[in-house]
Image (tube, rainbow over all chains, first blue to last red; front, side, top):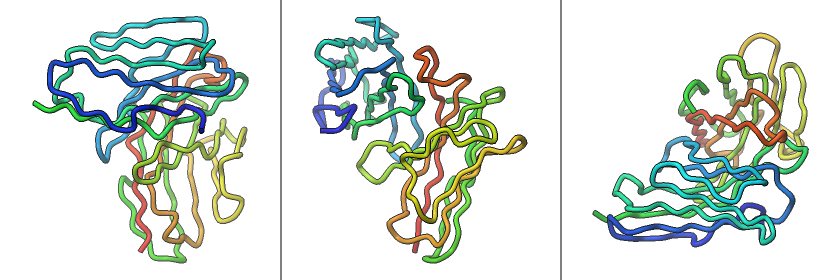
Length: 111
Length: 117
């Protein structure tokens, strides 16, 4: 599997429900970031979590990082139809500048 | 991602033509990254540049692709003799410092969607 691999690939929920997406990676990282991409649009940065952090919150978003398992999760609480998008995790490896992205989780929130 | 500008937003080329994609980073950012995104896939790293220097081009195809980030002006991703397989969205990102330091993030532009006929 590739670095920064998300699961599930697709997730469909009802408005108001919580959505959880997971990301696994392979190598040591300096930080991990979550992005959102609406169809045909650019990426919007959501949260950056550093390798020495375990949890981070931003509004309805909660990100966890477990470096021992090389995994992260993104939780969106009380989802809205406007949250419908693809969500990507990206890792920045130690000593490198580039971000490595997974193929994303496509989230559909039904009104 | 406010501040990173890419143009054109859409570019159509015929096979064999050249494509030039431009990226103006956030003001004050000297680190630029180019990524390519195929349909239904994530972004794949292509090249990382600082002003006048290519730092990492490990994701760039060896032929037909080149990138530059001159002292003045935008970063340019150039694709010569385009083929249908080059059709993709090309994203540029910029950062204030090397994001390998762990404290900075990359800010993405809206992308250029290249279609090769």
